[in-house]
Each structure stands twice: as C-alpha cells, then as structure tokens.
Length: 178
Image 1 (tube, helix red, strand yellow):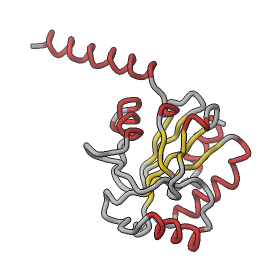
Image 2: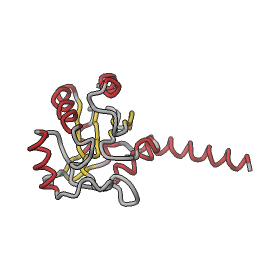
Image 3: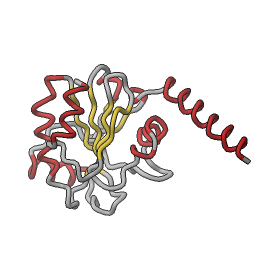
Image 4: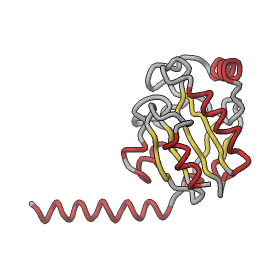
C-alpha cells in the first residue's frame, strides 16, 4: 500500500511539472464585457492581476483599490483584469449592467471580461489551467479572489478575498514582480 501511494504521489508530481512547462496564461483569452477579445498573450512580459468580481458583495468596495492599482502601476507593466461571475450569487446583472455599475460607482477603466464561471466543471479554461498550474490556492473561494500572473505567464501567487489590493502584503508581491 505504501509503495502504491509513493508511486501515485510521484506520478502526480511529475505530471504537474510537465503541465507547467507546456502551458502558460498566455494560452488563454476572454471575451471582454463589450464583446471584444482579451488575449492574455497581448500582455506578455507584464504582471497580470486577474480578479473575479461581483457588484453585490461585501468586498465590492475593492473595485476602488483595483482601479487605484491599475492607475498607479499600469505604466510599470501591470495589467488588472476584472472577471465578473455569479458563481457566488452576487452578480445577477447583465454585462451592460455590470459595466455601467463599475463605471458609475468606481470609475473602472481596467479591462473587464464578460460574466463567466470561475469554479466548477463549467469554469472558464483559464481558471482550470490556474488550478493545474498553481494548485487549489488558485480556485476562488469567494468574489475578489486575486491571481497574480508573473511576466513568465505562470501563476506566481494568489490572494483571498479579504486581502485588499492596497494591502502591504499584496503590493509587496506586485513590487517584486514588476
């Protein structure tokens, strides 16, 4: 039984390494909230912060922090991408309603995707890849979960909903990567 477990663990370890070497965030694209394409390959050699967002969440005020992050670091090779989702039943609106809410209430100018699933079997392929690349820490547990992609196209870190984009801990990671 022990040998079987060791072999199973080794197989999982080596297959993960192979997956990591063959794919990157640059292999994925989203449809924007306006219906255009957001190709992550357009952001090669930049740090990308991908955040699943919702309008009716206790963490919704983080939109302001995300806009500030975008404004302060976009000229330093950082991209912020908001990914609306109703997986946690806090984003019931249409893409137009979401866009209007974000622009009116927070002055959002960073790229936003159309509303997608970020968890489960029907999750967007980027989120499936992030789980494979980084592990369960990349799976959003709630809205405003942050995934940081390094300039190499790999998941470098993730932050739970309660960590604000303006926190020292979060900004320290951003500063090291840019």
